[in-house]
Length: 320
Image: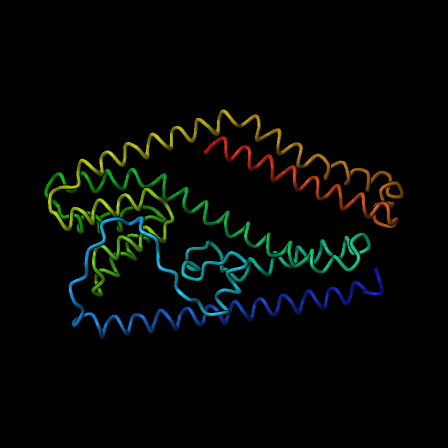
């Protein structure tokens, strides 16, 4: 492999993993310090704070905040340090597992890729991290969206019998399953230390990343400023969300054949390659030992990756 031994590659991989882990720990420490500083400033400034102008729309563009370098570096892996506690596993376990898998792939293909094995390992580890974090957040958002119509119905029933909106949301925080219950609990904790209702709702919508929560925040912010009951608005929003979920489920059912075909086409080359490796190892070894085999292997991997991405994009666009 151009004079570079697998041991050197493993050492470089370990150094890269240690560097990313140290950067992540530094970013987490910086984020905790920033949160403590903001909480202290808010506690000092809250009594002397003038009455803020109520922004009715939760869809306004968020101001860009300059982040520390360590947080920006970890952001390349797809980690959201502000929501690191929302992940089902400690966030640092994902980069470690991703780069171990990328390092194992690099050792297996170092004869075929040569010196390209190192950048391929780094790019593959980063892509795997981003895909894993994106998958975890997508699952969480899906659960929140499925639970949201019942949450809205609970609030509407409570408001209908004369219970204030805040008390209704406290009931949601106590009774709603995860992750909705913890999100409302976090918002109520912010309200208890002096954060306004509009700001708390806006942060709740920003953490969820769902437009339905932004509609909810806008409706309650409008009700807090103008008065009146948000019952009709919340009932309509719950009905729209239920219809959207039913339509999405129908779309997934109609696209199940295409998704199954895409999965089979993606897995079939790997299964055939493994079968050839087990039955006729000398035949497939040419892909790893011959220069022409290296080029064929790289082209095949690139074509397979491009095909998977194209099929995924077509299916997602159709469902959207």
